Image (cartoon, rainbow, N blue to C red):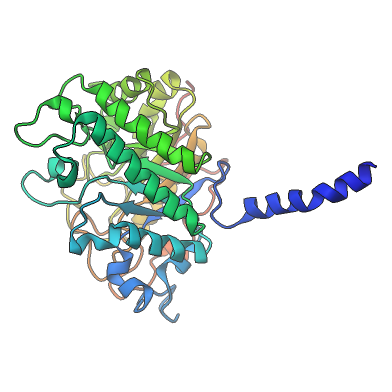
Length: 398
């Protein structure tokens, strides 16, 4: 009978529902309210010596737990390439797995940024950061693509095995000039650099395609994000077609990705939150892509590039309150103003407390590890479409 059939299938249906309801399970309907917290293990002894507090009278607890109870739903983690230096071990695979377990324990989703390279510092740091890892530097290009895909598969399988699959993955970090920049003396064909190596889009698309397939083979519903450092080009209306060319060139060559990932800061060249409306042309050209502000920040006090590099002037006060205003304006614009494509916002440098990142003082805790208003007022919560905050915009129709 129909009733006995229903009773037979009910456990399966309930089981499926339970899987979907797990904290952090991949759900495209989830608007990302995220925070990059990759360095946290180096600040809190891998969670064993946390000083972070939800308010001045609260006991210290895991900073991730504070995020989870103050309106955030996602933690963004970075995975470096296969040659992690000792001081970068927090972002090797074991470090990422440990942080993913911590995040899932407090009900946070995971967004993973696979750098494939190291975070080097020095005169040529931009290129070094995206240089082909030393152990892969002498591989043929097809073998390099295979190595990157295998590295991706290994990471995804390890995350899957412990029940912490990310809901989204970025292939590279701010890859405006591509990935696997060739070493001195190597031809452009050895890597997937696209700034010095004009027209190398085919190689970059090959890398993105192979890594995308590796991710989807383990986690078909994980969203693929391609991230660019977009602040200046959003502010100038993409005057030189930089953003437009990048995304349309890789798309033309069949590179599969689900979303644009924008780094958007005033210290790096943004002028105001309405700059995000520059994405209209790309949203029209590639109508199936969602839009993340995958990195943003705003200073709660002067330091680093703030205020001197914030042109023409800081959009909001450089204060704990100004930080709240920037976040609310960005959130509102992405949630309601980007033609229904806005997918989420993630803060960068969130974990900084006793000291600042060097770029700006944009952490969510003060120097005594007490939560700032950006947390205590739950500024990361949903915004009211009918009540725009100062600076928040509904972009013109496409």
